[in-house]
Every structure is written in C-alpha cells, then in structure tokens.
Length: 392
Ligand code: SF4
Image (cartoon, rainbow, N blue to C red; front, side, top):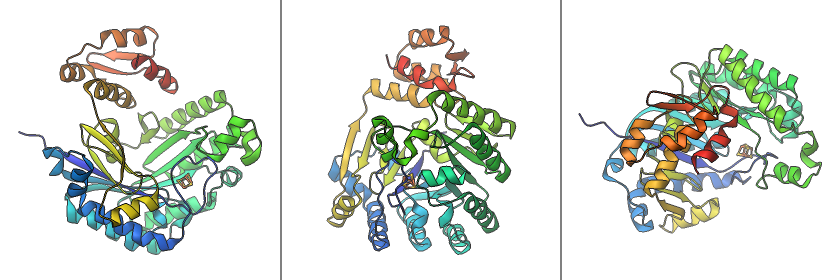
C-alpha cells in the first residue's frame, strides 16, 4: 500500500506589541491597521501558491501538491494579537486551498493577549493547541527582558484556555535570561509543572548581534541588564535541572529543546526534524518540499507589496544536493533523542557512515543500538560538538 503523504502548513505573523530585548527575529511593532491587509495577502498566497511557485522557479513535487494537510502552525511574532476573525480566515484558507484533515492546529500566543472571548473564537476556528511564550515565571526577569506579561498573566491565561476547551498547551521557557538565578530558574520550572502544560520547550538564550541584549553582551555593556546574564556553565546547569525536573514530572524528552507528556509531541515540529514537507506562508516563512528549500521576503511591507502586485517575493531558494540532504538527515535527525535509523539513511544515500560515527562513539558522545544511533544520555547539552564532528 502506498504511504499517504502529509503536509504541514506554517503561517508567519511578524507583528509584536513591543520588541523583547533578546529577540533576534524579523518582527516589528506596527499599527493594527496593517493586520488585515497582511492576512489578506497570506490568504492570497495560499490561493495562488502553485502559480506563485512556478513563477519564482520553485518546483512542487506531485506528491506534495496533493498531500493531505494535517498540521497548521501559526507562529510569529505574536499571532494572538490578530483578531480572532483574522485567524479564522487563515485556517479557512488552508481548508479552502488544500486537502485538509487537520489533527493539530497550533497558535503561538503571549499570555497577556488571551481573553475568554478570543479563546472561545480560537476553538471555534479549529485551533486546538496553544503555544505560550512564557519564558519565565519571575517578574523581575520578565521586566528586564522587555516582556509585556507577568507571572499572574500566565496563570490567568492558562485557566482561560482550559475553560475554553484547549487540551493541548505548550509553554516556552528561556534559560539564561538576565537576572536569572539557580533559585529563580527552579521556581519557573516548579511553577510550570504546577500548571501542567502538555508540552514544554526550553531554549538557551542566544547571544548574537541580532538582538539588543546580545549586542550589548558582546560589547561588554550594561544596558538591558547585560551584566546580569548567567554564565555558560550556569546555563548548562539550568538545562540539566530542566531535564531532571521535567522527567520527574512525567515529560518525555523527545528533542533537544522539547519535552511532552505521552502522546503530545508536536506533530508539526516533528516534520522539521524528520525532513517531512511543509509550506510556509507570510513574510519570512520557510518552506521545504523534500528536494528544495525556500523562504519568503522577511520584510512584511515588501511581502505585502509584492503579493498585492501578484508576485511571490522569494528571498532564498536552494535545491538540495545529495550531500546537503544527507547532512540534514544527520543534523536534524540527531536532534530527536530517539535517534536516527542509520541503515535507512545508508540505503537511501548509498553511503557508509561507520567512519563518521566511530569517532563520536569512541568519544562517548553517541550510542549505537543495532541500526539506531542517538546522542548519548547526559551528552545532549554538548550536542553542538557532535554536530560539528558529524559535518567534517
Ligand atoms: S514576542 Fe517573541 S517575536 Fe515578539 S519581540 Fe518578543 S521574542 Fe521577539
């Protein structure tokens, strides 16, 4: 029997209420008057995606063009800022323009934007999973990071979503925020466990020139509480604490940054690590057809102007080589803690991976069990080292 292909749809909403100090995403604070034209363009892009791709030189393999869409992820930015009617239009546009059998429809939300009216409308639109940018339960850290919500908002918003019937909630936390201490990190983890979301993501603070805080840290300055950022060793310890606390609370660590209660691993995000196809709509959205990767223009105004002029502004477009695809199999696949099936990869790519894995295995960084290779337990926080070795 032929395996049925499924497809994920990602929709990028690049608008926020303020700019968090650590943010290195292409998002902007704009007048709400710009929301409706943007949503109109996203729906237009979905309706005309085949024609737009053809004009931009993007090939859509036959199996993808008629695949069944089973997941939608509306991310950002802060998509929960949009009117519920806008979000409904987006979900309806997926149903109107694709073969849809939706099992997971995720909305990223900031806790302070949640109201009972919005939550009820989200459920009515078909949204069945909400991913919260909690980041911390400590008000001092939230304030230093430029976040709009406070600890009390997380409790209030989670209760509203539960009452509205959302049975799949994810919380994001960031390890390494300014002013974070061993004690405050433990408190954030304990508070999270108390609220019992089905899914958890823990990210380490990224320090690069792309954010105001990152730039300040690199320059050795003090603005944005840059002098109060935990060191690398502390961050590694925070990650280890998260692993222990979440495991004790019944979460399964299934990807380097992600934990889930049984049955609640993110179906949409698994597609990224398993190299399954997804199409992205909106400014800066990335797509993967199985053989090609491309991204739309990052600037929301450029994106809207182009779509209104009947053109898709593709900024990056790459046709993967066999070597590039193989590197992705290893780099993305090993992020999943269950590991990768080496026999399948060797068969599909006609290569032997023994030499690559032998070095890592003797260094104790990976473990092998038959055809499965996975990061060694306790070595997940050094996974970057593994990936650098693998790419040699
Ligand atoms: S809410 Fe998220 S996307 Fe928006 S500024 Fe903050 S970190 Fe960036």
